[in-house]
Length: 386
Image (tube, rainbow, N blue to C red; front, side):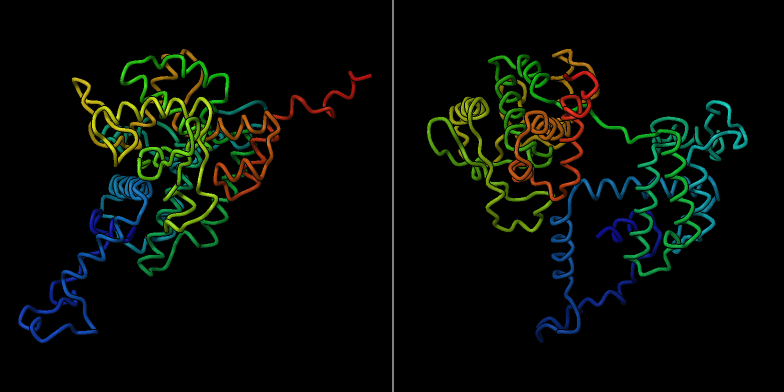
């Protein structure tokens, strides 16, 4: 699917001519299907299934990376990007986007950081919307764009320049150079219990206030749901157990993209979170909504529309954090990070925490746990303890 996006959108490879597509001519249809060839309808249906089964975030991420590759290549080489991309081009891309010290011989203090991307090219990329700001991007962005190009070559069955030893060595040393300078991946602030309570206090009894309160608590209390999972939440998958509790079945997630039935995908919703969702369900019932999206767009006049988009979930989190005046940068992921961080702070069971969040990596969750328990460590207080 990623190859199709790259091929059709960026003209890296030309689509097959009609006579080479393998479609069954109209005059042959009455004779039955040819097992060696697909009909046009079958090809269209297969493409539709591939698109539907693929993550929208993945498509957007790959598309953005390849748009940037095409724009950068056109600006740098004055030509259209085609596969296979030569190894020197990939190396040039890395040195154009990796920040390094201006003077490698200078060991006294921090030298200015520079890259090889010409200023006029940098300005043109920003002016045309391919970059958000001048200068070298984050290391994660650079690595991601290399990974996307690598995947494109793999799917096209072309010689992969990103697997070349020179490229791999340069990327490895670039990571080490960033680490030596103390550069860390930028992370959004976690919405732990205290800042979350401040955010919830901004949600009044208005229609929007009830929806946002239910959304925030649903996302946080069911294990820190991702924004795509919140946007995809449906009434059909929410089951009331008693007056104060619900069970929500997570049908599709990052770790269960096939939608297999798994016990760990049933998430409890209790306490204040259950009450907030109950209030919102009452609103939906009053409007005659008994199926479909749980969290919906609110239109003018208080009309409830279609399901919220994942980006809208992010915007709600950012807007409510700004209203609450909590300091720091927040996103929808702050809810997930906040749940795991708070679990570590309160010394919750690691298996129970992972069962709620759906994390597959113990190392990832332990990172949150260790960070939050460090200040309370007895070992750190040995000098002062009697």
